[in-house]
Image (cartoon, rainbow, N blue to C red; front, top):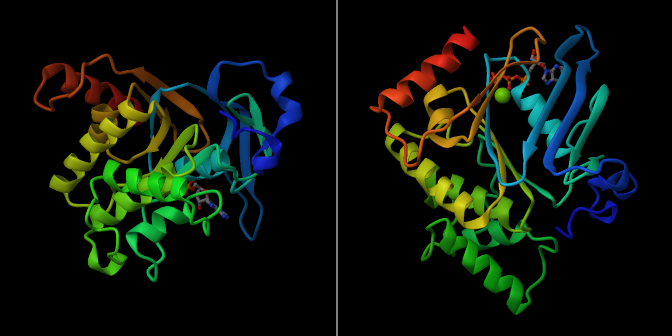
Amino acid sequence: MAAMTGSDGGADADDAAATDDTAAVRVDGVSKRYEGRQTTQPLRDVSLAVERGEFVCLVGPSGCGKTTLLRLLAGLESPTDGTISVGGSRVTGPGVDRGMVFQEYNLFPWKTVEENVRFGLDRPVCDCADCAARVADLVELVGLGGFEDAYPKELSGGMKQRVAVARALAVDPEVLLMDEPFGSIDAQTRDRLQAELLDIWRETGKTVVFVTHEIEEAVTLADRVVVLGAGSDGVVGDFDVDISRPRERTDPEFAAAVEGVRARIE
Ligand SMILES: Nc1ncnc2c1ncn2[C@@H]1O[C@H](COP(=O)(O)OP(=O)(O)OP(=O)(O)O)[C@@H](O)[C@H]1O
Ligand SMILES: [Mg+2]
């Protein structure tokens, strides 16, 4: 999409020609080291490609570098070694080609639902009819019609996370990056949000990279589950989930897929 140019702040147009590529996301030999009182290296020589429109879940033990990898994809941090590209363009910082949803809703408490979603737009202060219509569509898309004027404190956790998803979608990003977005939400609401996210994914055709601790959640959602190993082991498993949606947890195929992933993590 048009957003993937150097002027959007996240991608280097010069590299677009160099990486002639159909993958939406490409991680090539990426390492990340933090130097400090203690040096840690959560990622060592990680490579991964995500196709356009693909829904990939990243799982792995706590501390294996899932959030670090997502922050690198978002351009919030830079790799120590290796390269990351989105839509064929090298990531050099945050950009409107990537929308991010975090576990902690990160909404502005002093802004309403409508204003929070609007803030995701390229020009948050824009009051034009097109932008207003886009914000209204997004609020509807995430099922919050009627709550436009509510403030975050008046919303449940699930509703807040719906606002965060709408805000991430506001600039029509190529890729949606989600870090345990439903981690602090009760099980029933989480099931509903998962189904809603799949509807949004189908409707918008976005590429999704979704981090979760929950193997069941990964197998419910993903086309592919990628397992990051502990101790900088990088990608230790890569599973296609060929089960038609909606997926039933009681289905033996589902249970077998969960067991396959679990065995790789443990
Ligand atoms: N800014 C930082 N400075 C120093 N070390 C960091 C920094 N960010 C992450 N780390 C270290 O990198 C490692 C991986 O952290 P990360 O948050 O990516 O793990 P994670 O897989 O997301 O874990 P969790 O499942 O618990 O969320 C940890 O050892 C952490 O302490
Ligand atoms: Mg994390």
